[in-house]
Structures are given as structure tokens and as C-alpha cells.
Length: 196
Image 1 (cartoon, rainbow, N blue to C red):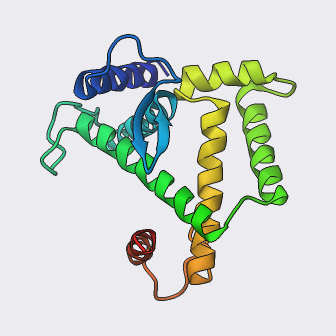
Image 2 (image 1 turned 180 degrees about the horizontal axis):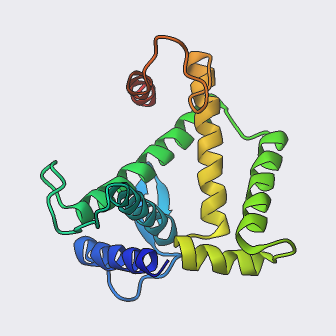
């Protein structure tokens, strides 16, 4: 737990240094704009933290500790990979949302109810039965460098991605891969579709 928090803090400091961010950044500050959509510091930091936790998990599977300054084999450090992953993820999310808006793809009441149930279930799993939103918000902030709003936004993006993929190709991206298709092949199709 302490390693994860230290890891997230290290990633945050790295972003400040690499992006030229000042000490006065707050979760409401805009760190980038994609197609006119502002990306908040809170959301950007969530994805950096997510990438850092992912790398930490991958290394730990082999009994290793992440060296954030080491070259990851792609000509960049592990720390820079986390920053780049966060940037690419928020760009992809904004492009998917724009394409959905263009095609009139929206979240239904059932989609929103399912997202809320998922958040409520995660709140109970994380904080216990009867936990308040304030307790859950504090848990998300301290354990995942996140918030309920970012969690909801992430789940909305996943649902919209599935709906977009279904509208364009006739099947769901997450959870259902047709015979003969590879995940990489589907990713290329999605990328091409977003560029339409």
C-alpha cells in the first residue's frame, strides 16, 4: 500500500517536472485540450497512476521492482512511458466521445443505471456496507489517485466504446471477440474508424 502511494506521488512529481507544471496545480486545472475538450489534472493524474500501478504489477509478477529511470526497451524511461500512456489514453477517450457525439451514440438510462450499480458495488467492496460518498471519495483519492467523477467518466467511456464498436462493426469490443479476429486487429480497426 505504501509503495503504491509512493509510486503515485513519484509519478505526480515526474509529471510536474516533465510537463512544466507549477506547484499551484489543482484537480480542476486543465492540463491539455483535445478537440476542444478540456482534460483535468485529476483525470490525467488518474491515468498516470493507473499506468504506474500497471507497470508495478507487471514487474512484481517477476519478483522485480520498477526502476523508473531505466529504459523500458522502447527508447524511453518507465516513468516517461506512464506519462505517455496517460496522454494517449485521454486523447483516445476524447476521440471516442467525439465520434459517439457525431454518430448520436449516447448512454441510455439502463447504461447509466448499470454504471451507477458498478460504482455502488465498488464502494461497498472498498469501504464496506453503508459507506458514504465522502468516505468513498476519500478512499479513491488516497488509494487510486482518483475520484467518483473520474471513475464514472472512465466507466462511461468504456460503455461508449462498446456502443461505438457495436455501431461500426456489429459486435462488442470488450468481452466478445469474433472467431478469426485478434485484439490487435480490432484495435487497428477502431483507430481507423476514429480517423474517419
